[in-house]
Length: 307
Image (cartoon, rainbow, N blue to C red; front, side, top):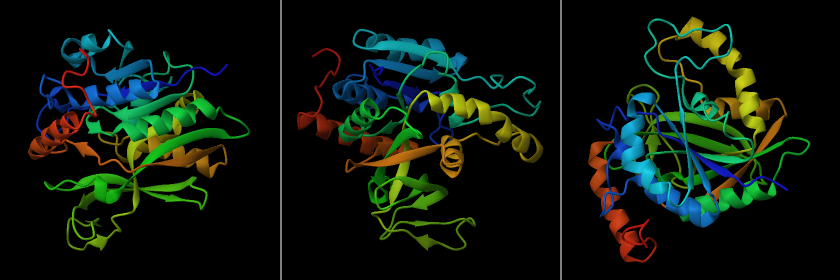
C-alpha cells in the first residue's frame, strides 16, 4: 500500500522585500497567517502530516505562533534548514550568510519524509483546488519506469501584484501536459499583458496572461530527495567557484536535470484559483480583504481551528 502524501512547507526565509518575518504576520480575523489557510485546505484534501522547514532562530516563535495550534489536528514535524547541511567534503564559505535555496530546504526534510510529498512556500496562498489536485495525483502515481512527479501551474494573470515585480517560473509543456522546461523570470510586472525585463527595465517583453507559471507547489516521491542530495555536489562545484556568497540550489534546477536525463516526468496540474501573497508589505491589505471575502462566502470558518 502506498504511503499517504505529506506536506512540506518551506518557512525558513525572512522576506527581505517585505521587511519582516512575513510567515508569522496575521491576515485573518483571529490571528491566522497565510499558511493556516494552506494547511486547512491541505487537510481537507487529505494531508495528515505537515513538515515545517524553519531556521533555528525562529523556531520557538514559529512553534508558539503557528505550530502548536496546528498540532491538535495534524501530525506536525519541524526540521531546520542549515547552511552547514552539505554533502561530505564541502564547507560553507566564510562570506556565506544564508542557506542554499529551495532544493536544500526540501532536503532538510529527507530524514522525516519516506514517501510522496508536496512542497509549498509558507507565504503564498494557493487555494483549495491546488491541494486537491496534487494530493490526488501523488496518491495515484508512485514511481514507475521513470520518476512520477507533478507541479501545480497557475495562470500568470492570477499571480501578479499591484505593488512591484514578482519572480515566476514560466512553464513549457507537452501536448499531454508534462513539463519540458521552467524558465525563471525574476522581474515580472502586472499589465495588459503582463511583461518582464531582464536588463533592469531598459527593455520589456510581454507575456500572455494565460501563461502557466510555477508558484513552487511541487509533488514528488521520496526518490526526489535522494536524487537532489546526490546532485548537490554538482551544484556546489559550480557555485563555490562562481558565486559562493549568493548561489542557490533551486527545486526547478533538480527537476530540469532529471527531465533532461530522462529519469523523471512532471505532470503539470492546473488551478484556476487566484494566488495571494505578501511579496511586499503593501500587498497585505489585499490579502486580508481576500481572506475576509472567502470567509464570508463560507469557504473558510471564521476561526479555522475552533469550528
